Amino acid sequence: MFLTGCWNSKELNEMSVVMAIGIDRVKDQYEVSVQVVDPSQMSRNRPMDRSPTIVFSIRASTIFEAIRKFTTESSRKMYLSHLKIVIFDEETAKKGIKEPLDFLFRDPEVRPDFYLAVVRDHSAKDAVTFVGPTEVLPAMDMYKALRVSEKAWAPTSAINVKDLLQYFTKDGIEPVLTGIRLRNLEKGLTVENVKKSPQHVNYFFTGIGVFKEDRLVGWMNESESKAYTYITNRVSSTVAAIDCPDSNEKFVIEVIRSKVKIHPEIVDHEPHISLVVDTEANIGESACNTDLKDERVFKDLKDAAREYQEQILLDGVRSAQKLGSDIFGFGEAFHRKYPHQWNMWKEDWAQKFQQLKVDVRIHYHLKRVGKIISPVNSGQDKQE
Image 1 (tube, rainbow, N blue to C red):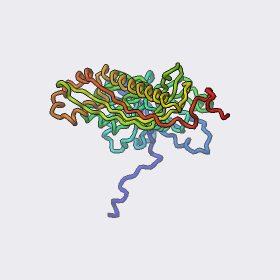
Image 2 (tube, helix red, strand yellow):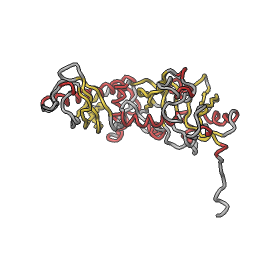
Image 3 (cartoon, helix red, strand yellow):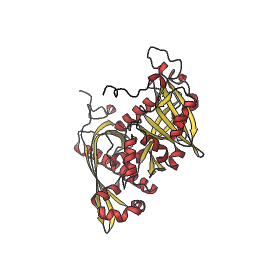
Image 4 (cartoon, rainbow, N blue to C red):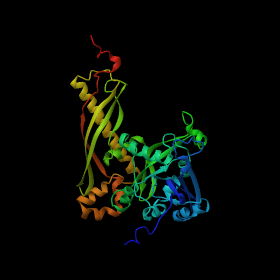
């Protein structure tokens, strides 16, 4: 028992801690780029005279080969346990992501809590190369931003590797991944990018990439992406600007709670879905020249917000139907409720999904208006 206490060890000065991996498709090979921590730059008392991370890039036929091949360029072995984000370029995503992910699913050293995304109009190597503006480590910046964005801004969805594995193994639901765009990349590949404000290069998460099995088949815009996060109950909070009922101005609502129940039904031997939505929101901003103390006016605003959400949901469903990918899990709902019928529909569900009729019933609760009642410029809140 005394001899089994420490049978193996890895010294920190023999490892390169990988924070992000970028995977690009180059002909019949993968170009794998890893963002690793430069330990000499991690002290806060040390001036930032060079980038806090080092990026290695190499080509190989498989991901495992590439990881081992990095030893020809680095004196340290790549350590993947602290991996935070994996980024694919669009070409890799369109050809299929199961093959490059197999190693990350299988390797026992890799923790299954990292996020995944697809970079748009740039390479994955570019996405892991630039120097981030907020956190010392760019990968940690993207990891935190995606997590916070999902909670506060519904069009983004933080999909980690465990979520993706469930999508691959379940029937009747297809995966999605959030997209990333980069601005002014050519000016921000050095540490000078964070020594001035505003920064040359920055990133932003935008849109949701729709997959069919493991292949990217299209993109949903910001509005359509909200439908996905609403229907899959991934919305913690979000905001929306809505036209005032009586003017060209807008008012902004803050959704503080939303719950969607999927009710599958068989009508005339065909599948039918009813979405029952329960939403609670507050008024966060108003430019409507109205008195919010008036019950009729308040009801008009609530109706406008309900109609806006209904249109968002229907537009998102139609967009997914055009792409032929059931990202909402409607098929999974039929699988649970009508298993015998699902076995008959399973093989051609993509076609049935495209013709699926979806009804939306929304119970909208508009609660609070904040510390003031009327718009600031209306003069109605002035004290006599």
